[in-house]
Image: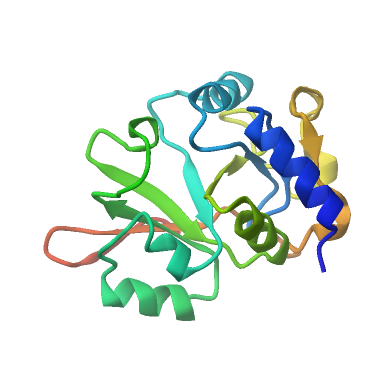
Length: 190
């Protein structure tokens, strides 16, 4: 069971436009409220990241995903269920999301997280969570909490306890896929 007080503290910080460092089902993540453009700008400035490059969103379940993606290809649902490594999917024509989250080609990248802590936080927050690796752009992603750059640690408003870290022994970013117009699955990052 996740510490309710910790979840409430994190939600308060997210609602105030703050940044959090947290364990995900891939690597340690840097996150914020996706509906707050200034919080997203803080992440981009902190990471020295191109703001045109959109961020990944985490949701807690396929049902939650359907709030933002009304038409999920049946093969995607099957893939999400059976894929052994965390899977981020690029979806076309999302709904109920602000324009600053949507790429020029009208797509958004969303992952249904398998991390228990993230699922609990997202359920309680009742909205998706921005997720990007906790590293400066162009630098290697941290393989554990101890490898996170001090500039990032000092800039966030909250760092989740290591107790909730469920990442693999050899963590790596998620696989990223999308469907093309012909319905073919394209792997963008394996």
